Length: 335
Image 1 (tube, rainbow, N blue to C red):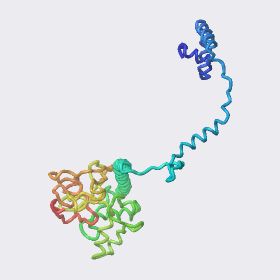
Image 2: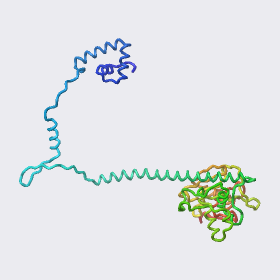
Image 3: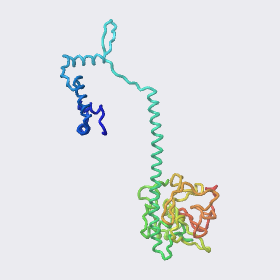
Image 4: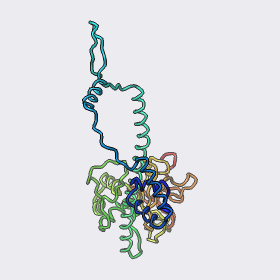
């Protein structure tokens, strides 16, 4: 308070200020004689008006409470003429009917709230599933790097050219057998495949070696879980495994491709995109694959085939049962 106004002084006289304001006024009065003069003038005026005097207590009129109760009760009845001509009184019961306009208003409010809440809830759940899937892929990435660290050439696990292990999904059994991963890590939270808890178990490489016929086919189809894996690349007519160069644009694992969708896009996340783990451990969500004019996407090699890459820089992710060789062309129109 820089300089007390007349209103402040009047509040001080009437004792209507807070304790802090009272102290500020008193401090200003000690330092400013003109304020003290103004204060005395106000006090004399207030005394003339009688504002500083407390009114004497007045008792309420006798019977006021009873009369008030009778008045209130009288407002709750209405006169009714009986068939005999007498006037009677009956209590008025408050009624509230639910009208059509009330229903329309409530319905509009509910619809408006639902239109805001449910899309937001659905989007939030969708984003949470993407994040959970990315976390799974990062764990798989740790396993891949751990595996490559134990290899003399720092190669990642991958399929063989022929035999029981000639399928992209062999990566999962190899990581599990080396205790670098667990079965649950290979399941995407947004998969469309219905499974009961504990139903999915990644087979060991030895189980694949012992299986044959339909049993081997079933193991290949499911061993990779919900993800697709790098098929390696071909050099001089020979299938080679990818060596760890920590490239930021070389796909190693991702949401499993689907032959029923255009460009083999994954169906894990409602078909709205796919998570991809790259060689350096980075995980990225791709809402769209490359255009139809560019075939070098995560699910095809540079020649447009579902097969191993044509060179060491050509990354191709195959579904669990996809063989690296022989190559098989998948026409976009047939997907």
